[in-house]
Length: 141
Image 1 (tube, one colour):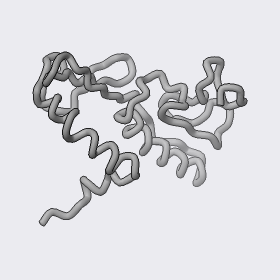
Image 2 (cartoon, one colour):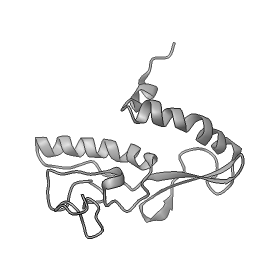
Image 3 (cartoon, one colour):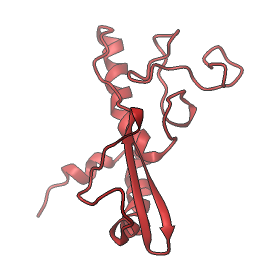
Image 4 (spheres, helix red, strand yellow):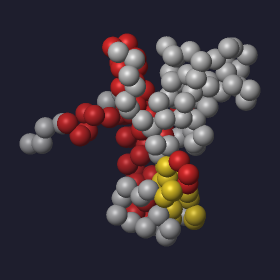
């Protein structure tokens, strides 16, 4: 990738940070680890980038009017000690954007449990298999 015409000077796929569309090749989109997006390369970021990429690819194929926009969301659990985590969640510009009801500025045993017990199966069993929506749309009963 680094030596291809798709790469910028730093070797990343050169995309618009909001649409994820290549800046020179309109039929190319990139996200995650290969993209030039100025954000952390985390699964949480890709989780928010994926629906934007899909919506904009479909829009490009239909009429070329890209409407979906990525706001730079990323998240990173920062282990501060055994059993303690701070969850850093932010968007472009470094704006803190917590999605859970606990303060992102305090260590939390709850976030430790989320990192240790909830995130691995969510990541490996759902996100990587493209089944994240299965959780939200599974009938209760």
